[in-house]
Image (cartoon, rainbow, N blue to C red; front, side, top):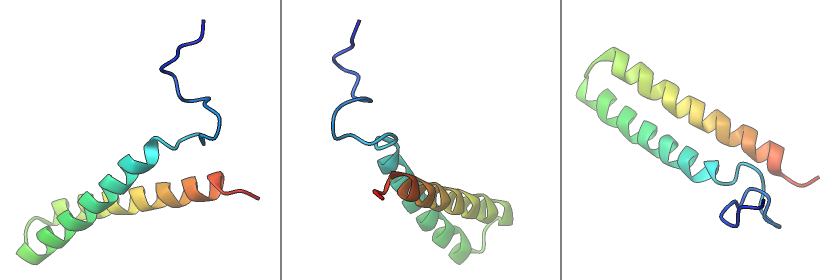
Length: 71
C-alpha cells in the first residue's frame, strides 16, 4: 500500500534532497565551532574533531552535488 506521507519518490524530488539541509547545518556548526575553539586556544582534540566534522560535511555536500547534477 502506498504511504501518502512518503515523499522519497515524489515527482521532481531528487534522492538525498532531505539530507542537504542537515549537511549545511553541520558545516556551519563545524566552522563556527572550529573558529571559537581555535581562538580560545582550547583543547587540540576538540579542534581536530570539529575540523573533521567540517571536512566531512563539506565532502558529503560535494559528492551529493556531483551525483545530483544533470548531465
